[in-house]
Length: 325
Image (cartoon, rainbow, N blue to C red):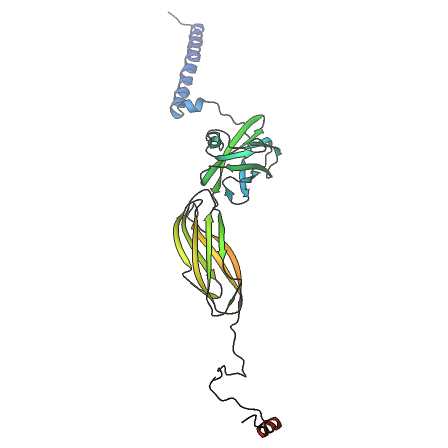
């Protein structure tokens, strides 16, 4: 059979159409397999990434605090002052500072009648308002260590609450306070002369009482003088019970004239083992010792020595009349 150009032409068109449909499928498969092998997909890579910047909240801290008076005594009031500082450049709104809130609050002991720290006069929260960046504000609380409070160190909880970008935030801190007891002593009697003489000893007696409500330990009772010698001037008592009294008798010999300072001293140890003392000062005027006159020898006359008669003209007249020897 004779093939014509038309038949060959039709075959060429058919071959071209077949290549057109087969080649794209083959070419697209290779790149897909290569991509999968070089960059395998992981769950993290499929998660969306949030690139929106977040504004951190202001940082408010209790930069310093103090108590007035410095020593906090059981049964006495004191002022607690707090300095709150904004450590960032961002503004905090509606700032409120409170003390003793939450579990373990400072007034828990007071509610049981065993003493403790309590806030007086106002509530336990103070409003500051707006606190700008890098600025500070101070608040004060009137407080008291109630009767029966055990001496020691106390941690007072402090909460600083504020608003930032319509959110209410708060941070908690603690400040430490030392609670102490102060003993009380009183001199019952003090017996010593108003004046003395150099080199001559005089007696002095003292009686002191513990007028506080608790026993004091490590007690020594002594009498000291600035320019004198004190004999048996110290006694060790140990524990000094409340409502008790102790006496001490001494002998004091002044060494020079002038004002002699005599001090009754009670030395003891406080609840923290620190050395403390109670002093009661007295004064004695010391005079110089009396010396004999330079013109006299100090000898006493002899009673058996013959007495001398009158001399001069009176002696001659009395001798003439036989009235003298």
